[in-house]
Amino acid sequence: LRSPDYLFYTVSYDSTAVGFSIVLSFFESDACLLEYMAIDQEWRGRGIGHLLFSEIVRHKEVFGRYFLVEVDSDKAETPDKCDRIRRKAFYRTLGCKEIEGLRYIMPQVTTTSPPEMDLLVYRHELPESIERSHVRKWLQSCYVGAYGMSADDPRIEKMLKNLPVNLHLI
Image (cartoon, rainbow, N blue to C red; front, side, top):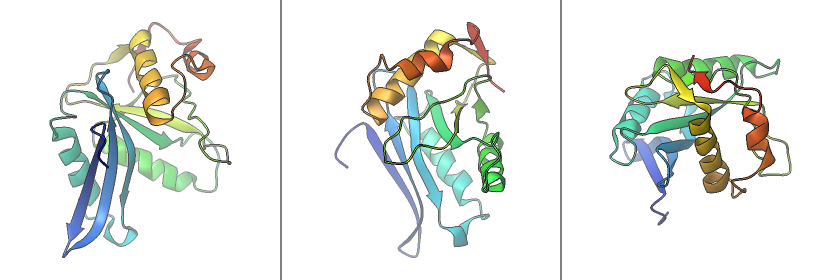
């Protein structure tokens, strides 16, 4: 909680937390990572998630930076595919875009393998494309800062290997 790299946000109603988020700010980078955001199921659909996201991206530590969002991929056929589609659509309504062609590999941090993920990007003024070398720096920041992995982790090159120099945001 005392780490300056982490930002914690809560939304409460009558002293009860109804939503929260955790943001990791990469100070050596122009990016931040939304590590987690959740709204109590009973409170969903009331605009609280939109409000929380809007407040986060206006915060002085986040504003003007690229805001990365790891989200369960909706490309795979899974039992929770409808939830994945809904979750991704939520972030898209906020202005997040996906890095075209990037098959994001989330490092394994528990005994179970992570789900297939996609990486979304938000910024107040988001360009139409990002250079692959720039995305590499973001991935390295995520791997080192969020997961304690090496900046030279071979999964980073695997994600970028066959991608063009300029990656479109879709």
